[in-house]
Image (tube, rainbow, N blue to C red; front, side, top):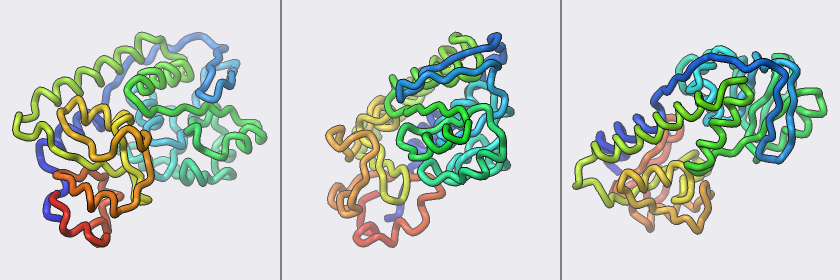
Length: 258
């Protein structure tokens, strides 16, 4: 496997997924309340100032809204923007360090709906907001929810969303016709979990003219047998630096077209 990511695809994906979109800092007057993706209503008497995020996409959302300075701790996988790597790392979304989180005295903990820690954190008196940005529509909705938590006006989240949407369109237009129809495998982590067609990443790839080898029927982020990828033989493999180590040592992967 000689080529994991072409330059054109690298630039397009980095532009879409890693670009920093900053918005205004105007704050609403407290108190405020937010209904999260569990349907739970969370209330504060004052706008949260100390935030823990246990999901990379939520960490990035806080920063894209211009409020990175309010983060006091993140999960081990949050690595963008660079500034968050200097914050205390609090385990993963599925195995967070509860004691370390409590010690930081956060006003709110942002988590995935899949985490098993919500009930325990709430039992210890912490405010928890569970959100799950899987599709493009979810990303737009979650931007609005996080903006609410931060006490920001809806216009701020909509401005960020317009930047994201415009960036996807610009990236699609910048790709040469020759790469359209390229068969792509996008690995989220080394389990391996992949980004399927119905995920935000999958929808972005579709707009870029790519063909995702992981169909929508498998779900947004399915766990795959590595043999699935060998049989699919994609043209391009997209993976983060953290997850690349050892990938070429998987049985059969050295012969993949990518």
